[in-house]
Amino acid sequence: MELQKRLQTVENRIRSACEKAGRSRDEIKIIAVTKYVGVAETRQILAAGITNIGENRWQVAKPKWEELAPLADWHFIGQLQTNKVKDVVGKFAYIHSLDRISLADEIRKKAVALGITVSCFIQVNVSGEKTKSGLAPDELSAFAKQVGAYEGIRIVGLMTMAPHVADPEDARPVFRGLRRLRDDLNRSGVLPYEANELSMGMSNDYAIAVEEGATWLRLGSVLVRG
Ligand SMILES: *Cc1c(COP(=O)(O)O)cnc(C)c1O
Image (cartoon, rainbow, N blue to C red; front, top):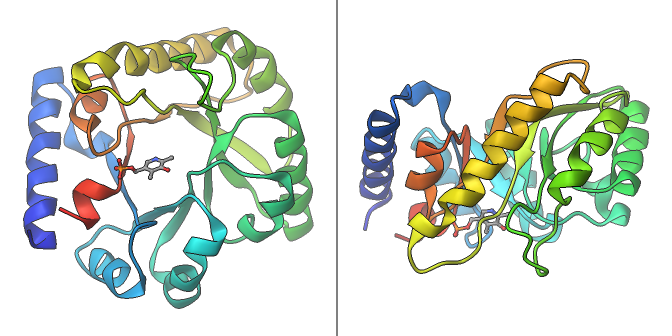
């Protein structure tokens, strides 16, 4: 399938999920996850109007970032080792995988040195699968309280990965759980500001994620591979 057709299919599904849930289409942004493809294909995606680009490893992102950096907003969506923070902060406007204090300390240090603020999502392991990273839901409040006071970091919302399930409907409770955690967090006032974004939904389950309140979809194979 052509990129345009794939985009159209995604767009149609997002719109019908919005309709079903009574949401407005402009609440939802698409991140094209380009980890499977190179510079040329990433350039096509940008030309098609998707300007948020997601990558999960710096080494894989590097050739694309070096070539295309000013044309996109860059999202780091993968697990981030503390010793890799120096490669990411200053290049990626968003980090979706903030899940521990040692990582927040490192991001702060680098951001403050550069005089910038990095927009971060706190990753939460809503499903509780042992293989998934992210904070346990009951750790979220104390973590947000601490990091919310950090210079150089702005918590913009929460991120989760749903389990791989045959029927995407089974991912719904995980998405709903993340939305509730966000609502509780904002109600509790532990952050000095509101954090409204929900980074959730991938190729196999994004329609359900939209129905449950996603504001950022991370779409790889459905966009770049058809
Ligand atoms: C690869 C990846 C995605 C995109 O996955 P697809 O199933 O190809 O859409 C989304 N989020 C993260 C964290 C990823 O690593």
